[in-house]
Amino acid sequence: MTVNGIPETVYLTRERLVEIEQELRELKTNGRKSVAMKISDARGHGDLSENAEYDAAKEEQQHLELKIAKLEQTLSRAKIIEARDLPNDKVYILSRVKLKDLKTNELHEYLLVSPEESKFEANKISVTSPIGKALLGKVKGDTVDITVPAGLLKYKILDITR
Image (cartoon, rainbow, N blue to C red):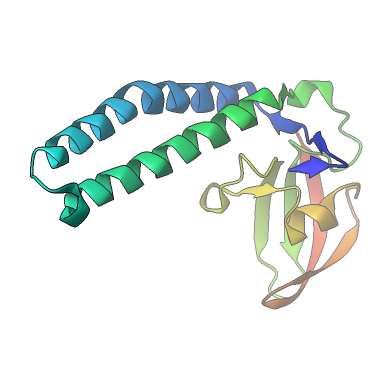
C-alpha cells in the first residue's frame, strides 16, 4: 500500500519479521528449485502448446514469484515494534485487550497487531479491522459500539495489558 506514492510502513514484531525472512528464504531456495524441476519434467513430455502439465507448472512459478515479491516488499517497509516501547494507558497496536460482550456477557481477549500479523483463530486482530479500529485509543472502562458485517457489537473494556 502507498499513501501519496510513499510506501506505507509495515509494523511487525521481531518474531513475525523472522518468520517472514525464513519463509522468503524457503521460497527462494526450495520453492524455486521445486518449480524448476516441475517445468523441466513437463518439458520432457513433448509439445508445449498442448501440455497442461507445463502450463500448470508455469502458473505455479508465477504465483511463487508473486509471493516472493510481496514478502520482499513487506520486508522493505518493515519496522520492528516492541510492546514494551508503547504506553499502557490506552489501546495501541500490541495491546492485549480484555472485553466483555454487553449483549451476551461473554469475555473476549484480543491482541491488536498489524494486518500482516493478524490471525483471528489465535485472537490476533488487525488494527485495521472494524474491531481493531474501534478499540484504538480507548481506555479501560470504556464502552465501545462496533459495527461489523454481522451487526452491532457492544463491548466494555475490562483490561489493557502488554
